[in-house]
Image 1 (spheres, one colour):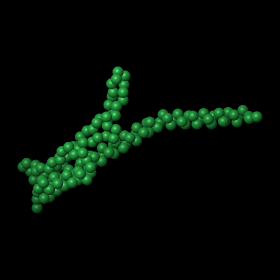
Image 2 (spheres, helix red, strand yellow):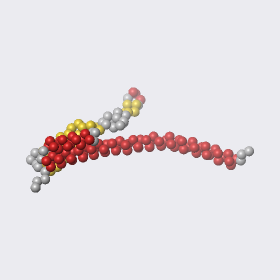
Image 3 (cartoon, rainbow, N blue to C red):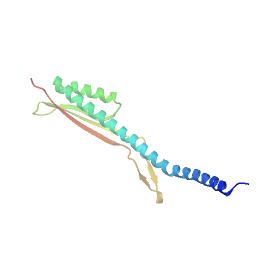
Image 4 (tube, rainbow, N blue to C red):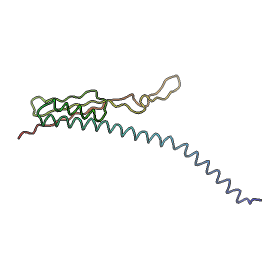
Length: 145
């Protein structure tokens, strides 16, 4: 026959295993949500930095060679290398200044775009947008020697 003490220890051990499972079930969705948020934030940062670097290099090339077409060619090359969804990319000389300006507008689409939750009444609440534009403008002055 088992002693009462041993029987109580066995019962407490099985209760702790059930508690661990419930804690996991409660915290795992929160962990997944935070993980997906960090991944999306990293993707937004990548798109922003890609647009920024391309615009800076396009404006700098145009200012170096005094030719907006050279800057536009480099800008397009950098945007294509980053595989960005380009909406607008221009390089132009700023009037009445010895400077060139590059404008970049790219479209960002989240991994889980159009994610929504159905609510009562047949309506749904959108959690993430279908996408949004990221714009960057770079200006580089011509070096006059």
